[in-house]
Length: 49
Image (cartoon, rainbow, N blue to C red; front, side, top):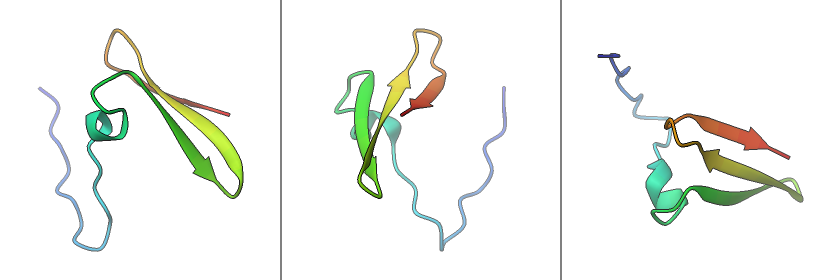
C-alpha cells in the first residue's frame, strides 16, 4: 500500500470526489482558463486544458 504524506496545516486539502460531486469529471477555472479534472477507470487523475 502507498503511504500518504501528512498534509501540512498551511496547505488546503480537497477530496477529489467532492470536487467531482461523486462523478468522474470536474471543471476547474484558473486565471480565466477552464481545465478538466478527470478520474480514470483505474483511479488515476488527469488534468487537461
